[in-house]
Amino acid sequence: MSTIVMTGGTSGFGAVAAERLRQSSDARLILGARRPTSAGESVALDLLELDSVQAFAASVRERVGGIPIDALVLNAGVVLPDVAGRTVDGFETTFAVNHLAHYLLLRLLLPALADDAIVVLTTSGTHDPATGAGLAPPRHADAELLADPDRDPDRDPSTRKAGQQAYTASKLCTVLTVRSLSEHAEVQTRRITVVAYCPGQVFGTGLANHLSFPLRIAWSLLGTPVGWPLRRLNRNLNSRTAAGRGLADLALGVATPPTGRTYAALRRGRLTWPDPSELARQGELAQALWNDSARLVGLPDSGV
Ligand SMILES: NC(=O)c1ccc[n+]([C@@H]2O[C@H](COP(=O)([O-])OP(=O)(O)OC[C@H]3O[C@@H](n4cnc5c(N)ncnc54)[C@H](OP(=O)(O)O)[C@@H]3O)[C@@H](O)[C@H]2O)c1
Image 1 (cartoon, helix red, strand yellow):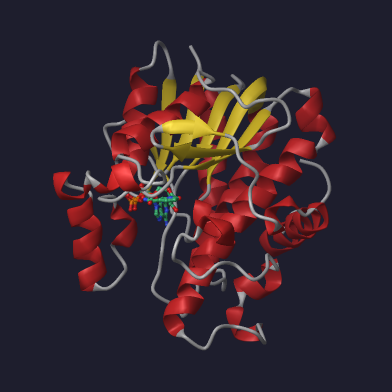
Image 2 (cartoon, helix red, strand yellow; image 1 turned 180 degrees about the vertical axis):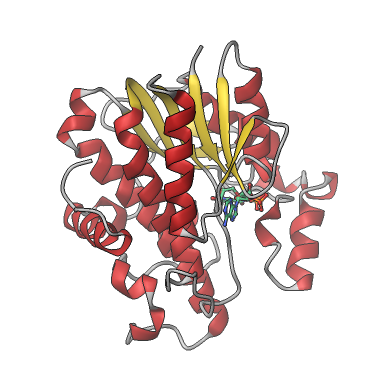
């Protein structure tokens, strides 16, 4: 029996992926969730609190009881309209949920992973200005400034754009984290596969829940058959089913990265392996983010 641990499996395309993972041959699926779900064995996790992440990791380790984890799927995420919110730990909310909490979880569960394990982190093509996704692209991946945007001297004065940048930067952080991890000696020795997964644009999920009423309506309407014709015009648009299948295929090892590739992007329902953004390819940036994130969550920076 394989053991899979997942966040973000309660809604959107993550729920589709969770169902697929649960149904796959003999997988035991442990879901970190804010509320109980029938999709798997749910364990309390609120990514808004680092203490909750610590408790979740401890609970997972206890439950698996030394049996190695075969796949870790970190899919949860939020989009917020601004950067006003702070978590109980004092970090800007989007950055804290999308990056810092997952970074901590990754570090805590890595020792429990099987050799040959698969780690998939959900990112977004919006991290890359070249995709023309329509959201304000990230300007940097400076963890200290992302954690406390009030200190960022170049923060966009527009509330809306600052919120978009918090999201796109958090997803840049995901790609950089995957880069750092995949280059780590221990990860390479243990042949652990690490992938950043961009599902393309997937309407009809809960991702617009915190945005304005008109945006929420448009997002949900475009997720119905009304929006389907758009998929023929834009290769980045995918259905929830296709995006969930792409995520599950990566987690199950049904789809594997070509040598040297760590960024998967779903285009017209198919996994492709393009280069991520220019910023995402900078090794020094990746290293600095890794070390700064470790400091923010209270871990030593070196090692996994
Ligand atoms: N939809 C898109 O177009 C798109 C494009 C690129 C990337 N993505 C990324 O894909 C992932 C899934 O997004 P989605 O569109 O499927 O959105 P969604 O339906 O809103 O799903 C988000 C998931 O994250 C969980 N989550 C959010 N905050 C959490 C917290 N504090 N603690 C624990 N879990 C939390 C949610 O749990 P609850 O059920 O408790 O809310 C839910 O399971 C996200 O990382 C998103 O950034 C989406």
